[in-house]
Image 1 (cartoon, rainbow, N blue to C red):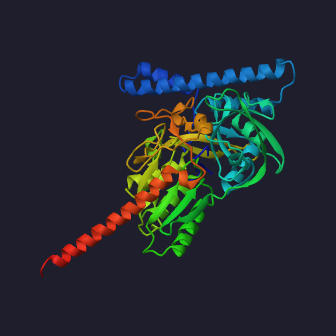
Image 2 (cartoon, rainbow, N blue to C red; image 1 turned 135 degrees about the horizontal axis):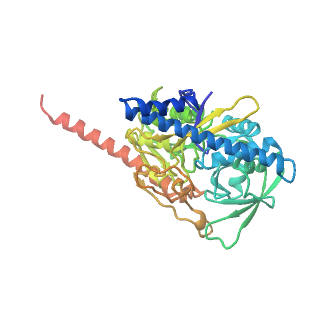
Image 3 (cartoon, rainbow, N blue to C red; image 1 turned 120 degrees about the horizontal axis):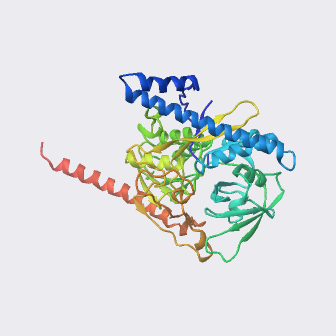
Length: 465
């Protein structure tokens, strides 16, 4: 079973894999012999010979790994744990690829499945690994982390006085998880702060409610999507239904879809959410190393908003699945984007279970592209209307998030890389300049449409039969 993840995790479609058999020794020799003696097909045979040489070199490297492994087992000062040696080697290999590929042992794989179901124990933050430390992508709304003031861009360097350097991302995350009501201390570095900050947090059972909503002024529906887990599409459907019950269709000016500081999640949920907000069309395509692995995901199920105007809010903390939704709605001219440029996490992680007891591999297998062919990777989504927030002095050192392009080992952009974007969202709606701009945009659009309709009606009546 292969699962695609659109976030510091995304699951979705199956991918075809080819089994390749390697013929070594005598076959390689035969190719070289044919190259020398065959009067025709020299270029083709040269290619076969080079491929065989590459395979031979690969197995030579694996022999080197085996030799080092045996030396450690026999000569190290203390008897090592073979399982830990192998897991450490796997982690080292994966960490050399990109910031989002990772190996999960059996425990880590089980915990990731809990997270995608929408309920788990811990602090409530989405994190990644950068320069040996854990970096906060975004805190989840209404969790211990968000209430403690942790924000996008914070770098966690120690957990309960134990330094994180040397740990894998899974090991660090596991240390942050724990029994509800137990306490934990994090040491955090913030940009331009004079010294590290210590934060004490009490763990809770994290029940992620991915969709929150209310009405604004009796004419606009506000829907905030905080993550894309298995409950997101159902949550959005309920939100739209409830808003339509509260506001009559003739009074409903439109919807604000707030994706700010949404770190992403499951690919299939991003596709479903897009399909609820547009009638039809491509949502996203994924392109891997081989052209034959290109996949296209399309909207289906119909526009639940019945064509009402949409404004989508994004910022520097909007990543992965949220960028897919924003990009699809923008390219189909279904929504106006307001805020700041998104994070730029445009790579697909396919979850590959490795058999009973062996955990799973989250491997970067493709890049995301919006329907117009724009690559999200290390570029992000640029809003139609940029709106910068007024940031209080105490948050100015952490109101910017560098984005995917600043991460060590990231996949290169297919174009000019973009990094650095504001991620601060004021807690009080009256101070939220992006939200207020969105409300104004919807009301102006509806009023303009109404005036145009009145003008057309008047013109039609003025024309004699």
